[in-house]
Amino acid sequence: MSHSQALSATHHHETPSTCHAETFTGNKGLRLEEALIFEQNTPGLTGVDWSDEKVNDTYLGGVRRKTIDLPGLSEPQVIRHYTRLSQKNYSIDAGLYPLGSCTMKHNPRLNEKVARMFSDIHPLQPTSTVQGAFGVIDELARWLKTLTGMPAVAMTPAAGAHGELCGIMTIKAAHEAKSEGHRTIVLVPESAHGTNPATAALCGYSVQSIPANNRGRVDVAALKAALNSNVAAIMLTNPNTCGLFENDIIEIAKAVHEVGAFFYCDGANFNAIVGKVRPGDLGIDCMHINLHKTFSTPHGGGGPGAGPVVLSEALAPFMPLPYVVTTNTGYEIKEHPTTGLNIGRLKGFHGQMGMFTRALSYMMSHGKDGLKQVAEDAVLNANYIQACLKNDMTAAFEPPCMHEALFDDNFLKGTGVTTLDFAKALIDEGYHPMTMYFPLVVSGALLIEPTECESKETLDQFIGALKYLAGQAKQGNTDFFHEAPRHTPRRRLDETKAARQPVLRWRKS
Image (cartoon, rainbow, N blue to C red):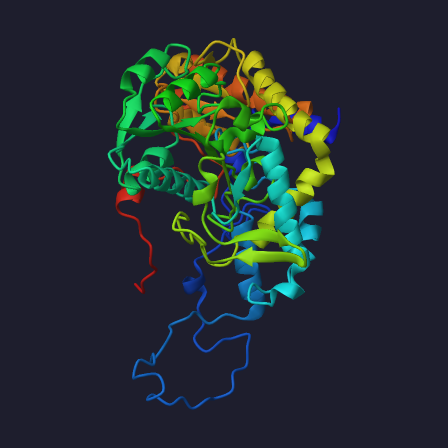
C-alpha cells in the first residue's frame, strides 16, 4: 500500500482527539496559529530605516496625521505573518475547487509568463510605442468574435457584472435611438444569477421574473405570455444555473425579437459550450464573457477582472469607448465618438491588459480543437460526478447535465443534517464546499462544477468523500455534522451574526 493510499485508508478513522491534541504553541504540526498583526506589535520595531523628514503643514493643508498607528514588526515577522495567512486560504493550486456556476479552473503558468512580457508598459505611452499591446487586444477581440459568431466586441468592461451593465446600457441606448423609451421591462428567469436583475434595476428597468418548468428550463409559454411592446430585453443564462442547456433558445430568441426586444445572454457558463456552439447563431444580441471562467485568467479576489461583451450588428454602434481600430499605419485607440450613439466610457484606459494576455495565451495554446475539447471534458466530468452519486445524493433534474451537476437536499430529509452542515463537513475532508443554496429554485441546492481540468483520480477522491458524508448523514450521525468543521484553524461561526454584525476593524482592548 502506498503512502497516499495509507493516508486515505486511515483518514476517516481518526478521532478529533488524535487530530487536535493541544500544544503549547497552539500550532498543530505545520498548521500554524497566527495572531492578528496588531497583536504582534512591538512599538518602535521596524524593518525599514526612515530618515527624519520635516513636513510643511501648510503644504498639506493642515491635515497631516499625527500618527498612522501601524504595528511595529521586523521584516521576518511581516513575511511570516502574510505567508501563514496565505496558507489558510484554499486555492485552485491546492486542490479541486467544486464551486458551481463559478468555473474555478486551472490557471496555466504559461499564461503568467506571457503576461510578464507586457508588465512594463504604461497606458499613457504614445500609441506608437505600444503597437504590440494593441495587437494583442485586437487579436483577442478577433478570437472572441469568431468563437461567439458576433460582429463586434467591447473589451473594456472589468468583470461579468460590469459586462452586464455594458450590455443593458447598449440595449437601452438602442431603444432610445428608435424613440422607444416606453420599453421599461426586462424579463429575467427565476434561476438567473442575482446580478442580472440587479443590473436591469440599476439601468432603470422594472424586472419581471419568468418561472422555470419542471425540467429546470425557462417556461416558454410563460415567457411568451409576458412579451409585449413594453419589454426591452430578456436576460437569460445558457447553459443555465441549473447546469442545463436551454434547448428552446432559438424559439425564445425568435419570440423576443418579434416584439422588438433584445436578447441578452449571461455568458458565465460559456465554458460548457465554447468551440461547440456560437451564441450568435442562436439569436443572441449581446453576451458578456468572463475571461476568468472560460479562458483561465485568475479569479483575483474581486479583481483584476475582464468581462468583454460581444454585440450583434444592431447593438454594435452603441458599444462603449475606447476601442482599438486598424489603420494604414498600424493600430489606434478610438477615444472620441463620431456619433451620439456610443454609451460613452465605462472604464479608465482600455481594460485589463494582464487578463487579455493570459486569455489570448490560453486560446492560442489550445487552438480551435483544444477549446472544443475544453467544453466536452467539462461536460463529461460533471456528468461523471452526477452518475457516480446517483444512489447517494439526489439529482435536482433528470440527467444528463451540462458543465455542472446540481443536487437537492432530498437525500438529507429526515437526517437532521442540512445542506450547510454537509458543506461544513466537506471542509474537514480538505475541500472548499460546492455552491450551496443556489440556484434558489432548488431546495437546499448543492451545485458542483468540476471543470475540464480535473483528472478521473481527483474526481474519484472527491466523489468518495461525498459518498462517505452522505452515508454518515443517513446513519443519523448528526453530531458529526453539527460539530464540523473540526480540523480548521477556526471552528464554525455564527454566520448570521457575522454577516449582520461584522467586526471590520481591530481596536485596542
